Length: 161
Image: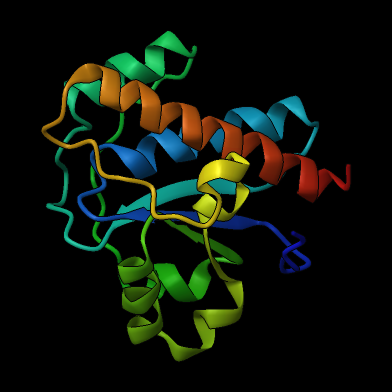
């Protein structure tokens, strides 16, 4: 499956619900993979459809990220806004409901908004990335693994591999 991405990537926005687990982990994984692929100049950040401004990432998300060498301890939740959607060149969402929220904020965002699950392992490709909030630590690790696979494949596609 090939997804046609926008031509430029100065601003990549990753969206989940609370901006406490999935999107901070995914943004960190994507920053890491873009750097490893030699892709520079893209700001990767995250927001949540129901985020409480300033809330930190969950301890489980921080710990899971650390096991992969990613640091999200500094993260603070940011609510998704029309301005963030309009400014982004590429928007990656976790669930189909997030697609609807982004489109409701800006109808023109449809062509630059994709499910991050479209880049995951074949067995779960295209599916929602489940929310680990309130789940056991091993579930965070499973979710992070899917996000890391997606980040690596997306970076490869951007690099043209």
